[in-house]
Length: 294
Image (cartoon, rainbow, N blue to C red; front, side, top):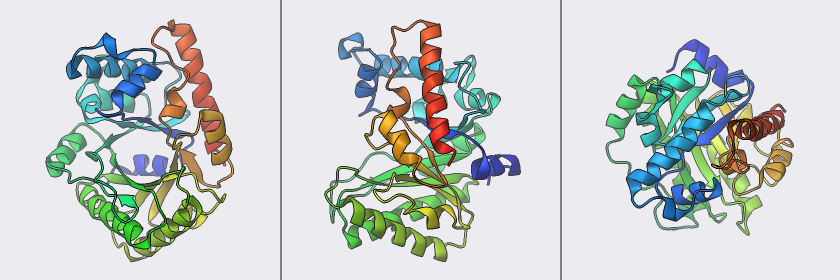
């Protein structure tokens, strides 16, 4: 496991976890939101270079530090890159921000109302490399579209199977079984997921994990997970909500903190000067941090 100071920070530190982990499929959309159109790049290397420049600008902003940003989730290429002349994880640690890495490689086709993770080839090698760079944990996402008991049970089982592999490398897994907030069965799916997670956590004899969950339709539904001794922290994804709504919904839930991506970045534009950029980012960080302090 990470050192005691890092674990204490993850368990009770102020702030939220920034999700800077858009991968290949979502990168063009993230760049478009940032004001960079598809005609600005002609291949993947140029595309990933532009998204790394965006992330570097965020990480080096004066407002991006451990005072309000507890951690940051990175895409593998971002982890392997450099920010401010240092490996990205080292640049985050220097700012008091705990680095995580996204390890999932996309989703299987839907079956039983859910989308499991695709197999993660080379995971042990990736975890060894990430650990050596100072990365404290991982994030792995799957998706729940319907309140299907069989499917949700399979999601939780797969998540904890991967989570145990992460724990074996001395890292903290952020287990992310996302409930689609547009699901017609969202409330029922939330409840089934909570109960499946509790059952699995009660049988879990390893080190604690973190959970990344959609904000529940019923406020405080996940409090038993927040209070569970095998859970370091429960973090919330914005799930498509714009930031004001995501923050308002999050603030209704005791003990959950944000792990937002689009809701963090939505006001940032490539064309902004540094003062305008830092002001927009600082305002978003403050708003999300405040919503996380419940």
